[in-house]
Image (tube, rainbow, N blue to C red; front, side):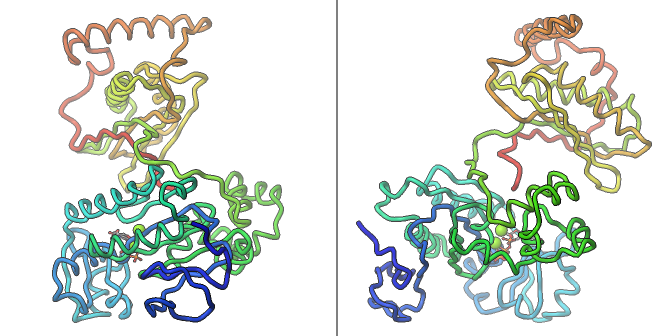
Length: 443
Ligand code: TTP
Ligand code: MG
Ligand code: MG
């Protein structure tokens, strides 16, 4: 089917009828929700985010709440998780302390979160996304990117129409509203979905990207959080338009690799792909201690056993990784991550441990840590993993020994062989232990 790729026309978000005039309401159903854009049929990256997610689920399940201000929150931290749009009119916001929220909106209905339910609903919506394309990249419980390029033949419809139908389907079948952003890249699709919330549908085209961004605050750029924004502000930079006038070299000289991101994103240049879930990005294991630990002597054996755990999982999946990531959380919840790239991908506990240990040694400064984790990222299959090291004979010996240990463990179980490091480990130490196979960091 051919669509009139004409800025004056477009289609109706409610009945999908193609419009053939510029009038404000749908020629067929009379709805005012018309979509028109010069690049309407040429853009294929979408971002979807549910509106006031937790609160909307609760409203759906209890129609009496429909027009009332609803706040989901409380619990241990005593803050607002989300507020419905009625409560937002009164000034209630996510992360606000509950007592403040109730000052602003004393008649609000407060509901404590039912995470299991929200996760279930989030999955149902995600499944509907996967009906459209395998290229779905979840960002959080209520949002995801979709790459619909090349799906036009399958759907007999361009992405914008597919996404409008998707939003209608979620309303009909799940009973929640979503907001959709469509663009040519992730950066702008995400900004677009936030633009007209709730029940929004916005499009940002290639032609308008630079102009669109120019008056927006730098905080719209990924990675510009509070601290970095303060740095930029100190340097007199407040808008993305200011970044658009700066040279790459100057930005990199001032802000390092972040400078490159500022340069590119400010100009609407973003080539990051939509990476579907399921592609494992890293394999890691971490543990939180009962009592905080500062000494290397105590941390090393824990690191060793975590490294072995990671290694076992890499070996089981026939994968290896080139980057070793050490994670530490201090007593005051400050997170430190350190990483090192190896010459070759590895799946050996010994290499993971030794690399992790050298990173760990540098962090020993008296700080008491509450969490230690080790992971491997930059994954590949294990074909090129751990070539025998002709220079470091000891490393080769250890690799051979590890293979032998693996064989024994395969025969007699994981506890059959204890290495010197884990042997010394004081048990039981860990309170919460977490294995992670990350579906990718949040971008
Ligand atoms: P968001 O998508 O950020 O917010 P939202 O869906 O509530 O509202 P919006 O219409 O603006 O998208 O977050 C999704 C859910 O994540 C939200 O419903 C509750 C939870 N959440 C928190 O628990 N704490 C927070 O600080 C935020 C921002 C979200
Ligand atoms: Mg949301
Ligand atoms: Mg969200």
